[in-house]
Image (tube, rainbow, N blue to C red; front, side):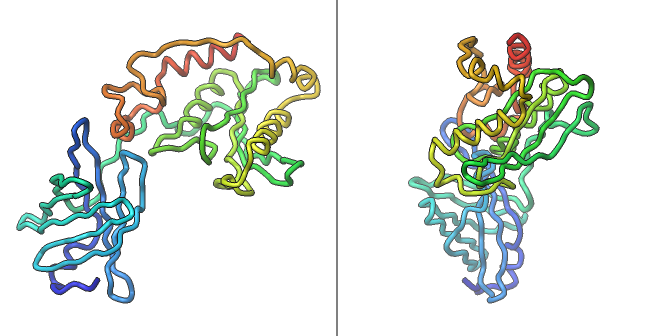
Length: 286
């Protein structure tokens, strides 16, 4: 929608962020406001704490220093007034009205101190894993300890839904952090993009459990030597498991205080160092 007050509307362009207070936590809300070639205005919404980005809105309007945004896809709206100090004081409504004041600019994002940084003390190779039965290629990364030719090997398998080889979620890359830790400790790791995700072929949404199982088998067998393949059946039937409770960790194994969904995107830790150590030691005992 074209603005009635063009002088004021140019002030609204760009990125605005604020904190939405909810009963158990707070959520960062980010609006990106831009103008199309046709003179209309487009806004997208990010909720980085929930890992949601580029949520489409329906209309954006400016009138007498009032910004109004309709977001029917999430049954929400925002209305606020530009203040003299160039902030927007307003209300975000989604079932109930909640105060939301906005500042110009990008919201600060948590640091990720565990994110691996080069140079790496191990070998890293881009690989293609061929699923011959379905005729598709899976793209992945194989990391190998710098020294030696015989070491334990692990194939990383993502959980529910299509994910890339780093299992990226809400700005975290758990598989990248786990891979780095394991390979630094003498363990080879293969991790692949799920089918239809990132650089891998096909379509994840139409894949059956049987097809996904074939891809896992391809991942495993193509990283094993002929001698290791002879023992594959034994490996598949391994019942040597360890169950351990981790107090004060959420289900992504991050040290947390509340365990709420909103808290996930605000944490700096990707995965507990204790959990990383336990994973590595368990693998080496097998």
